[in-house]
Length: 625
Image 1 (cartoon, rainbow, N blue to C red):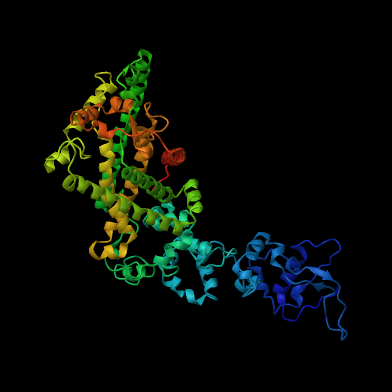
Image 2: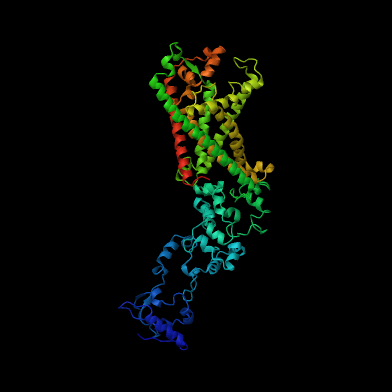
């Protein structure tokens, strides 16, 4: 093969020619070519010698494809044809990533050389975040805000962790960002990749709690459950590129700009609304004392309530089992020695109105639990499964609100019934009772000194220090359940309304009150569901006297045996007042109704027990926020 080096090429051309011969071993049947002899205009040998591809021969990128005849005019030419450069021959992984990126799309394809301009002089951009940002900005001119951002400023100062374009969008796997679920998820996950890394944030003197506090918020919980398109992500508040310190007057999260930022999603948000602390740490007593003590108080309430009643249930189960075994062996159960005929009687325990009201309570409570607990345990697989089965976050929220309306409805009904009992209804046996006598009387659900005595007697029986106590119309645990509704409606109801309608409430309340409402609503819901699905279920269904289910709330009936064993004091009082016969009712039941309520009760109990198990397992595993 004849070569024709151009005059003036000098030693660089000769060096490149020699390098071309030796650096890239040709196939056995392949000749070696002196590309530099002709391509001094296209390729500067000095620049190529310092480029990232300097160790590659020309034929590494321009493979020989076949012979080429000499030109007719006798001008110098290569004796072969060379194929078009294909980066994928070496950069296979990068090519695969690029093939699935938005840059490879048909609408606006971006070839490799668009970003890697002049492959012959290309230098490595590895770890050079500033250079990457400059390359991206050659096309993405609308993102010039990045170059005034805190991220870029930190990068210029030598910050190794500060993000450049590729840290968020990737180098070759640049995805299209739409307003769908995948695109909306990017608004958050791209940020959390760094901001949820506490070690990285600590060494850069950036708050390390941003990721954790966001994921603990309503917005973050929906993201974790798989519905990022329904809530605000990090970029919606902080913007995607113009990230600035909160103290910067130009920052979207500066105090003067917060209301306007919130109004993107909450049009009626005002100054009070904007005072909601987006990244508050309720474990930090110094910076957030009100949130810290709210959390401590609610935790104390949960622990105290569960500790007392779980111990109460365990002691009751053990003592009741022993007691019934001993009494059965001795033939001393009440019905066994009753010769008066009373043992065959059935008494009315609940009216039809009370039964209907309880059914409404069951349905609404289970609905609130099924729609609310997935948010509480948003990091669990079962939370996502339930949310998906409900049809997603928006539908679950609508169902939750509908159940809340029903809850307020039955609460107001209970208040109305209580007022009627206190002021309008003349109680049988005490027609001339004063308001105080009605409030603290034996037919009232309001706690009184008799309940203190009953608690003491019950614990004496637990420890074999006294006989099993008998009760009046309402036991102390039933009164606790009833009074808990009033506390619950104040705590969970009021906080729920605040979170449902934050804009109007923020007119009168400062934004940090919504942080408190979030803690109260979440913890009170945990208390209510945990109590009902464990303690209440034991008291009503699982204690040895009632297992596997007490149907009294569905049919309103209680046998004479049960009356004498549990509520003998009520029966004796009613008998003395001449009211015992009025309680006697026909024990016959509609078979279809009995079958229906038993199935309904079984389903309700199974749902509650399943949720209780999932909650306990998840909390032991560290889930639940």
